[in-house]
Length: 545
Image 1 (cartoon, rainbow, N blue to C red):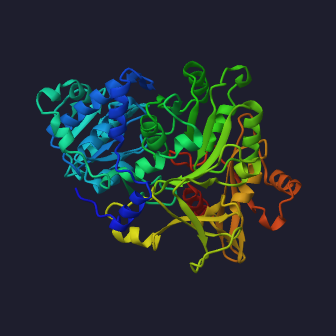
Image 2: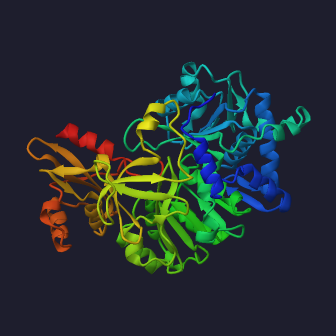
Image 3: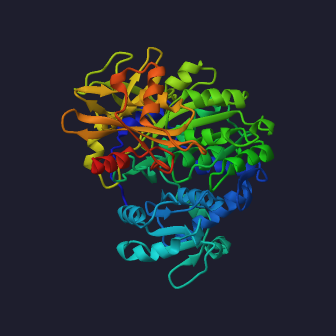
């Protein structure tokens, strides 16, 4: 399949000349590590351990096996796998032959998977026989009639039947004895070819298929060693799903790209187990959504555990509430916590810098990642001064090259070469980003904008609350009113509107910013990366209203 993109020759020339696009593939890094240190431990998952030499051998074999199944450069292969080493093997294999990776988040079901695989026109899909009690082959069989391009189903831990092939049987077949391994070198893809089709998390509605090239993905991780000190001696942890860009960039690809770090994976997030893994494997770096940090700080007896190796915790996707930052500094004084921001469309755009003062870490969303540019414009498109709130736009070498099968949507998402992120933000005088909300999250009460992110951050400081989302509820007179939707700390039985008002008053929050209503819920709807899906809350509250 050939995807239409907006990549231009001018972009290729510019970023190549600036040294931001190097033409290297992630398989180049794998080849180097496997040749130099084949016995280096590459990955530890819930099922076993794999060295870099074994990772290369298996991925090369899988690449030849996929060719035998008829997969060709440009074909899309979908895979809905947990954080298992099989994901890495498949990713490197597909990259090797120039096929397109389409990872699917494991919690997706018929509706999401049916839409995504149909849009991708995938020729092969790889799923587990079972994960967390769900029958994935059963779902594939229900949907298969809607996927005319699908030719093969591979099932990890499943048997070979008339409708599927066992992954174990596939990977144990010595394809290198049937096909010439020299084929792999001849199929080396162009670094500006699409290699990844990853669907947006869906915070605002229908998922969009984001396309990245080899160059955009390699560029996104390139600054990490210098900026954060992550290298081959690091032990990298990942519990966010590999099928989200955070897990894909920093769990699947980063360890190999930095020269052969060891990765430790969790297929199900469990904070107590995470602490065990830090002690056991001396984990030094992890990236995750802010709730993962909150969960870790709540592990009983944390102060008595040896987590001294854990040096860096990068919170991606949401600001770090001041209360959580201060708790982290008390509980884990050797740990550096950094907040970052990015999207499926643009990888990592901003990240805090080690040594930043606390106000920068908790009141800002990071500083532009090397190579990336940010700006804020007014609603008429005029550039704004430092400190002014407006529409956030981004450009740089990590930017995606289009939405699959949505060329006009892609073009409408750009202002020249600046991508419209859909976020509201301001940029301070030092260049640090402050995300203030989504353009669709703006609450306009009686003609006045309510500072959503500010109110949420204040409420996060209340000791009874674990999560907060402030959303707009339709109002016939004022257009909208604000509702705070919250979850409570285990053991706390109630939290009332009166309590919230007293707290906001004590915090000195202006009364006309206070939410008019309060909803206490068991959990907030979230994407797989931990972002709160406010559109679901808005829809539910609007229906109630």
